[in-house]
Length: 229
Ligand code: ADP
Ligand code: MG
Image 1 (cartoon, rainbow, N blue to C red):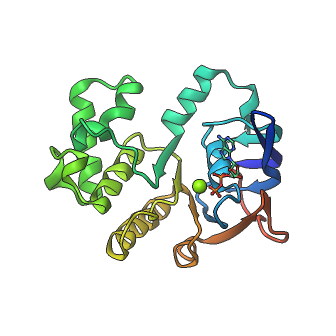
Image 2: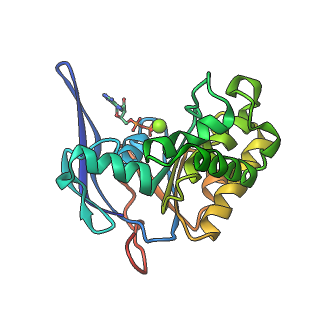
């Protein structure tokens, strides 16, 4: 993933907010990067752009060498579904669906047949230590368990990249440790992991830390070695 002088401006009525003011960052395949910064510094905006959930206002974003601005809506949807796994602070699980059905959702969008969806969802839940909770709904699970369901959902499509936006923000220290060790495991398995956080101890788990403030990266960070994902 490669960002070149990326800017993002939100227009709300007469007010314009420059959320990103010229971000250049390379993330190599298999890298584990933490993006750290205070509230309002542009972390979530950056994650939305990295995840193709939103588009840049200026500059360029290349994902696996492809210019995201040139992709159609259908291509973007496919990239989000197949190449990227998302984990959010609020878990974003559907409350009426069981854990395994939540995990299987990205597979339905990808057109995977029913029996295989269930089998793969169960495998993903087993990997996050929730084999005994597959039929529970989110409301019947603890926060930490809900986040593990969300991680299973992010994994089930076997994405190259996992983007996690404050994934431990709503969790106690035990659940935080579980989530961080799952992210470590994903990294060890060769996935690219981008972890957004405002907590130094959480960021310290990554292979490198990039600091963002007022929509800019601190000078002197963001360098990378090896191939670009
Ligand atoms: P962080 O995740 O670091 O807290 P955000 O990326 O959410 O920061 O926000 C960066 C800035 O952009 C903030 O000033 C925020 O108010 C503004 N912002 C974020 N999303 C929107 C939006 N959808 N519309 C207008 N302004 C937004
Ligand atoms: Mg945020």
